[in-house]
Image (cartoon, rainbow, N blue to C red; front, side):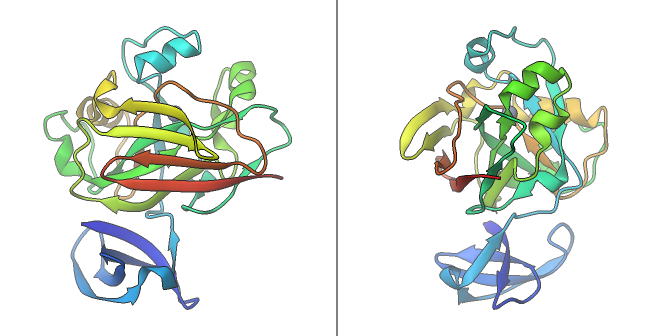
Length: 253
Ligand code: ZN
């Protein structure tokens, strides 16, 4: 099933579910008990919002060997985790804004796990029970600032640097899916999620040994090789086979 957050006719944002090209309301708590109403609203008539409001966004650096190498980095022995600011979230279709502080803003297409249940010290084997589903993310990065700062908070944390969506798919199998990133229709990144160094179970176990995961939190699982610069006027698309396409224009501040 695919869950969305949406606005219709200027109403307040709601959770919904998709069936073909129709949206139905989800009444209640998406992460608890809810009721799915009939799909009566055409998808083309709604504005899709970022599918959750995460309390935190945990990302994994250098989780694909070929990407670690392209930036001249060693492959990490344990997952290398960092946070993106919840204020950096934007939806499918919204613009990534290039900040004046950076001359090298890059795309990072990634598979994203959406947490469905509160958990701490989760085992890799039970991680599945804590994942509501999967979505597509673009871990936008000011590469020049990442290199100069050491800490990645600024490089990864600008407003609009966390596009994700368009929906959460609860049936998606993350073990071997093709992930591609295109800029203006040209292929930049192409890999399979099977090439992850640490799989999602291991990542959830590692992260939750540090911090409690909350419903709606996002785990960005790392980017494959082929990251590259974005300029104003570009359109960046991340596609994951079986999951969909996340598409965002790029503009100058
Ligand atoms: Zn990343």
